[in-house]
Length: 445
Image (cartoon, rainbow, N blue to C red; front, top):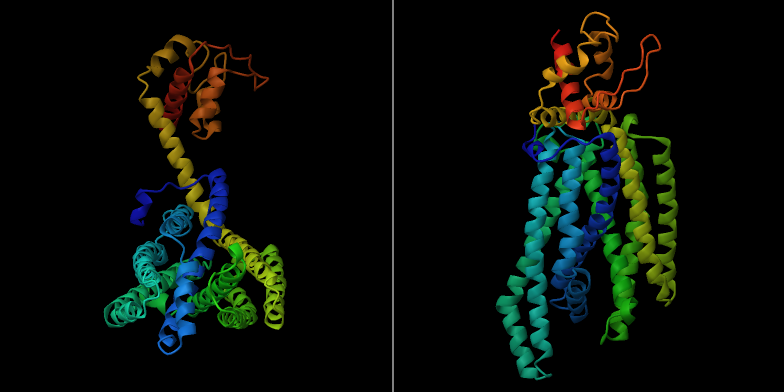
């Protein structure tokens, strides 16, 4: 059993339905956020490296950091908390399962937090340099001094923080996406027994590459929206710069969008029939239709200067993510259904009965005394008296203390062969103690 099983409880069927909703909501926060920072860091580092000889790309690299990597509070809300929630839900759904991918989910969370910390070092160092540059009041000598300092020390430290950040985040997302992939494919539950088998699995790599592709779609749509539309667009930038941002983001976004259906189709090909259902194919078709719309919007933006299209791209991408997340959650539900019914729900019922039994035994009520005073005149365990023998009636409750206690507390006529049982005036706790005593007594016979 995974050590985290000590900290989570197996859900009942009712709780499992609620957990599904929580899982979808957490994914709707985490996937767009993680995709935006992943794509944002990749683009910022690449453009920053090219920006050593091109001021336009250097400025674009810095602006991506300012606009896309948000602040820490938003990062905790959309990143860390949803990720921890997702991991806990997976452990509840797969309670008692020993697959290696579950433990790798914990490692993914740790790596993501480390990457998150270094990401804000990267952000803060860039912001500090820009702030000092703005406060130089256009004094060329001061600006030159700052740039020289940045080149010698600060620039290297800033770039290093960015590289460390994206490395940890990419490792984290590889483990996270891989773990989700394994969980959604029951055939891999036994075949992937160690980290090496996990690393070389082709389906995991396919889905991880699809995540990178989605991250670039999310980040380019966010760049277009936050740079050109949100609160009037980015300020104090030249028309040449804004045109470069539009063309770069539109071309990259269009390319990634055109490629994405291939990955979606291949991901279905890898899944066993157990994980699939008609609604999943319907949602896949809907996703393809939305991808066509997004691609068309990117294309129209390339051909026109209508900045209003950027908002359409940004929000349509979020709709696409929502469809894909719901689809994947349905795939997960199909994959884990046998495990839920045969292991998790059974264990949840056992724990529930144990809790009820513990509650009853700690009341200090003498159930045997109640039996002798109120019940023994009409009932025995193995022979019929006024009422039926307990050996016949008690097993019908299948060890359900609450159900039997409910009947004892407020008896109703059930068997027409016997007279109705009179209400004995017991308190609820006394009825529960009596039910527990009867179930234990009959079970020993």
